[in-house]
Image (cartoon, rainbow over all chains, first blue to last red; front, side, top):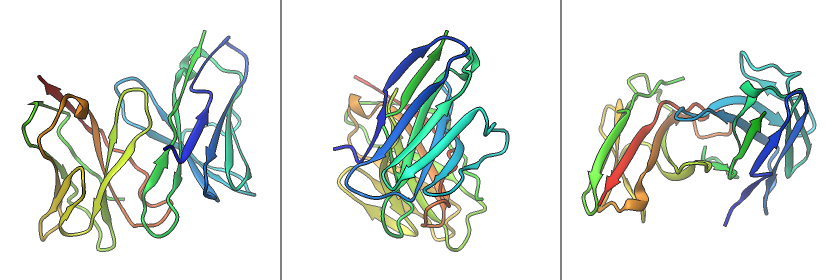
Length: 116
Length: 111
């Protein structure tokens, strides 16, 4: 079964509104989670690293005020797309590292955002 | 970070063995090689990981030559359900060091 769960799996919103996506680690704690964005037919692009109890680290070119990340607990990270525009429409995927020195990532099911 | 290069796409038929090669010429001594599978509209799923020589699990084998500048993911007797995008990643085995996805290889399995 899934060890990382995302919600919602899909969302449609109007331009200018904000949308929150939740990422939960199931049955394990994740002090770090990673958020990716994927456009159709393209690869995953790392957006930011979510750190429990501290500020997220954003990749170059990703607007931190646009994509708000909160890692409020050891099992939950949220991504809020603020003032969404059609160009923000994408597939957002979160991941959490497997416990131990493996480098393996568990990925959520993904959340498809469509901004009208 | 070691950059990876994979073929953009591959076609195969059911029952055949498929080998997908990934080039990582700048791989570092402490780097491991990890492969993921991604179906449309789903998050990637871990397939296999290795450091050198050969690794095998219930779904695939990973062949890594002595110079480690490339690796080959081998899928035995593919089925239609193996149609997916396959990504290889290279990096150290701790959180935050194996995060960069390359272009991946889009495998199409035909009946």
